[in-house]
Each structure stands twice: as structure tokens, then as C-alpha cells.
Image (cartoon, rainbow, N blue to C red; front, side, top):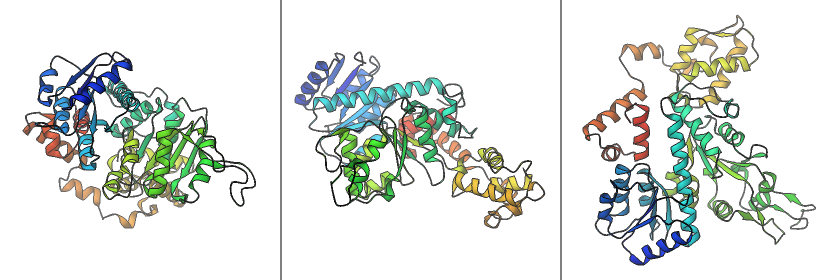
Length: 452
């Protein structure tokens, strides 16, 4: 995309000259260099930049403030933060306000162009998602067979599936987050099935099972005689998944030592099996999953921030079942069929109990409950007494909530966000700051509410 329009904002003239030269030599002639951050606002009405590189530390306005100005005036511009100080709070604050990547000075030409390519790819994915989501979140997927394992009619879940299909078309690593039992591996397999690597293997690795001492042997493989007991060559996970997808489950629980070794694979794209000297290409697509809050782990120095940032930009957050209650009857009926109990039905009272429960184990727990209840339904009907969750429900929970005039959490959230948005004069940046959410999240919420 050599016709991309690029903005560079930095108060150091030497860096501006260097970056300008790097990009033009790499085939990007449309580059605007600005040394005064206050001048950016005046450029936006006349120019629509595709990507902006913003220095974090500048006099007058800092890079995060310039980021907010750009996102308010040109939301589609992808912003990459440039910093000499790898500060976690600053980078996280920038990401929350819509930054797509960050670079640490000094910067090589390859790093600059690679960051530009990632930003342009992200822009393309966002534009495609916006076109396909316009009008209704439930528009048909291009490859429905890849996502056939998901039973949903909820807008929030349909949006996740759309985003997953779009990310599947690229080769960048994908991070899937969500509570236990939401279906993270199921979504990883769907991403693989919708990708260009669908003909290759899907290899799932539980990262909790790897110790630092065995990581290289298990991951890279080893040659015969590499160590005591290595009586034959063994292909590691990277070789087993060659041409396909390597799924790294429970990545948030890795030791910091293993995190460093994994980061090198992501950065360099090659590895050396134990006992060999010639490097091999890691021809795999990485998909990682965790139920941990990686941002919190980074702040606590339990997860490497450089690995976190490698995984952050193609993130799929699966909503918990309690936030998509309309899917519960659909999933329940599907699980009854899967239990091979012909003719078994779910009574209205039992369905009300299912809807009143918060499902801490999510879809996995619902599946187990329904299959157990189907075994007990001797008369062909599942009643509340057949549900192993009955003792954990407050008596008359659905009816009491309705009688008290209580509202679903989603409705409370909607009204609060819209009231802050109106009180902020419909200024998205200001409203996002008041709410403590990112600008991209603000845009997404307003679209969900039909306001953007």
C-alpha cells in the first residue's frame, strides 16, 4: 500500500529526517513530518492520514494528547506510539485511547516499515469489519462452516465471530481471552478453519504442562543423541504444526523464562532444534488463549510486556454466558440433542431457572448441566429438580427481579454510557475519558446502541 498517507510527529528534527528518509526509500512517498505537536489539529480537516507515528514525550502536548486529537478528528487513522522510555502505564493508556502499536527508540528501518505494514493491515481489517457490520451485526459469515460449532443469536457474540473471521484471513498472532468455559479453543479451531492454513495441522498445547527445562525439547524438538535418552530425532510442536496453526492455551500462566523463549520465536520466526546448529523456519500461525487479565499480570511483572504487546493487537474477547442470556435456550436445546435423548424437552420452569443462573463455568458448565438433567428426565421433560444448579438459585429469582423493576446489566450500561455521552456534548474522546474506557471501545458501544 505504497500510496498510504503517513504522518510523523516528533520534536526531534534528526528523528524526523531519519524516519522520512527510511519511509521514502522503502517506497512510501506520501509522508508528512511535523515537529510541533500543536500543529496537528490544523492538519486534520484537510488531510486524512492512514497511519501516524507519534512521539510520546514532547513539549506542550505529549503523544497521548496528540493521539486523542487525531482519534477525535480522524478516527480511522491508525496511530503508532514512539518512545524512548518503555513505560507500561503510558503505553497501556495510549492503547486504551486507540493506539495500534508502539516502537522503542532507536528504530531500525525494518522495524519502522514492519510497524507501518502492521498498522495498514489492521486498518484494512477494521474497514472490512465496519462494511460487513453496517446495518446488522448478524450478517452472514463468508465461511459459516468454519464457525458451525457456535450456536448464537446475540449481537455481541456475532461480532466476535465476524472479527475472528477477518483476523483469520491474515497471518498475525491472535489472542483469545475469556473466562473458563467460554469456548476459547473452539474459537481458535474456527480461526484455523477459516484461514489459508486450514489444510495444515491444528496443534493444541497446554502451556501449563511445559516446564522451563523441557520447553526447548518439546517446542523445538531434538536430534538423536542431543541428551541422555534421546535415542531418535523428535519433531517439536513447531515442526508438528508446520503449515498450520499452533494453539497456545493458558499462555497467561507461563513462567517468565518460557515467555522470553516464546517471544524470540515470535520476533525472529525461526528456531534451532536441540542438538542441531542449523535454524529452521517456524512456518506456523500462533493463536494464544488465556482466562487471565494479562494487563494486570504485566503491571505485577508476572508477564513480559514485550510479549503482551506482540499478542495484543488482534484480540478476541469472548463474552461470558451471563452477558448473552438469550443464547441459553438455544444452547440448551442443542445440548439436549447432543445427549442423544430423543424427544426430551425442557419445561418452562426449568428454562426460567437456567436463565436465572449466572453460569460461572459458562458454556462448558451449561453443557454438563443439560446432559446430566437429560439423563434424569424419565418422563421426557427436564424439570427444575433435575438441574444440579437448583440449590444455588435464589428462590423465585426471575420473578422477584421483574417485580422489583430491576434491569439487566446491559441496559444499565447502555443508559449510563449514553448519559455520559450526552453530558459531554457528544464528544467521544471526553466521554471515553470520563467512563475510563478506550476511544475504540466508545465507538464500538455507540455503534451497538445505534448512535454512531
